[in-house]
Amino acid sequence: MTSADLTANCREQALDWLLRLQQAPHDQALREQFEQWLAGEPAHAEAYRKAERLWRLSGQLAPATAERWPTPAEVVQLPVRRKTPRRWWLGAAAAACVMLALAPSLSLRLEADYRTAQGETREVTLADGSVVQMDSDTAIAVDYSASQRDVRLLAGQAFFEVVTDKTKPFHVRADGVRVTVTGTAFNVVLRPGRVGVDVQHGSVRVEDSAQVLAAALTAGQRLRYRDGQAQVSGFAPSQAAPWRQGQLIADDQPIAELVQELANYLPAELLLRDDTLGAKRVTGVYDLRKPEAALRAVIRPHGGEVRSYGPWLMVLSRP
Image (cartoon, rainbow, N blue to C red; front, top):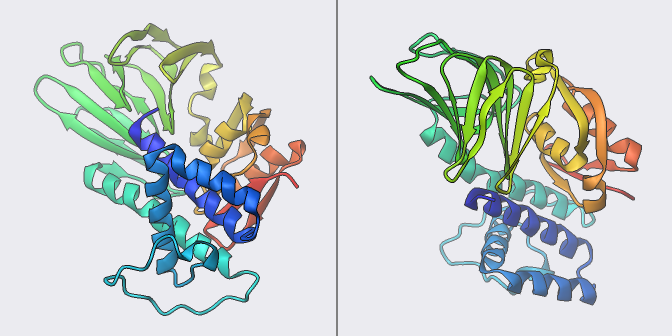
């Protein structure tokens, strides 16, 4: 898992603890569990401190946690319309979700040569005539020179149709994984903690900094790479990058993985609060043009429900 993944995990955990403590401020057992989590890693305390600071900027901080981080003198309190007593923390949580997501978004803006917004797809023709189709919430950086053709996938997923040039191999880099081709069509997906490569035609070589993961991944083969381990399986080449047809195809995949996929099509932060639900496996075809309906269709057969708190936060759990 990369440092970016660890940061994202800490951010999600910190938000989850904020929600739980606001819902049950007098639960001593919950408070003790929280203190154990907080002391477990230095990154936990830092993530929680930032989450509470952002929460405070929304104008509302519950007494249950206010004593831990006194307001710095330089923080300007913003005027905020108060919520009703029962629901004030929902608006604050939504504000925290949005602000916690800003830092990685700003970083992508600085690095990317091309990027898509949520719900947007885009086709880019590169200098050599190779074509990149970019999915929703995707960013790439391009580095062409006299001796190389390099593209970095910074976020999301993209389908590449590469013009053959044996003198200048084409490389796609995604979180430490490098895909090398001369001329072929393939999809690369980058999600927290994992990278995937699907080949529609031709062949590619896949490696990381330590080893060759696949010397020749050919048409109808896909590679999934997670935690230093690579797994190769088969699929119908016509199903390469089904997102281009507005489809999400799940083949015995865990719900947690599908939630990661659907998060790229929804403006809300998705918070999966049930590990057992996340581990359930699903097979089906879902409509990406209706991502919220797809999300509900994924979890409902396993007793899951989606609670929306405004446009910025969706909590997934079982009753």
